Length: 148
Image (cartoon, rainbow, N blue to C red; front, side):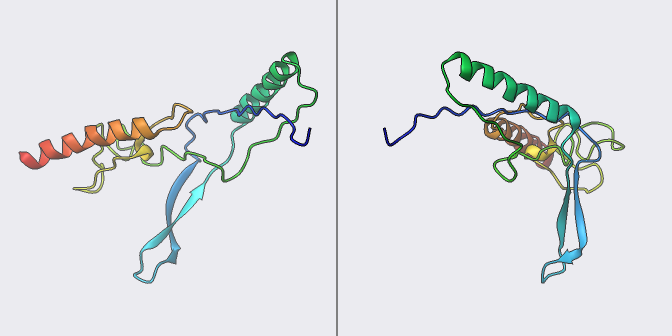
């Protein structure tokens, strides 16, 4: 046949929190209004590499058991849907978090963060529903704050 049958298994892992992985302002690169850009610091952790290798090995076993004639694996795939989270960590202690449990910044009055950057960890699946739930929760807290 002209078309080969293919089955793809994707391995999705979750990095554990790492203080070295972060987003910071890049004051050396500004837009025309002087607003700084961002600089992303990210290093794939050894534990994540081990999880990916383990997952790819198990996927190969499954495919061979199911009758696959050939298998191959590669990863990590750069710039293909990574969910960078946790850059404005939520917590009660300003020494190790950016926003409180209501999404309000510890150091900037009136600033709230209502997206996945306030997650301390992800669930290793698409975060859209969790982002929506957190955003609605924080919106309610902002409304309560403004009302009072």
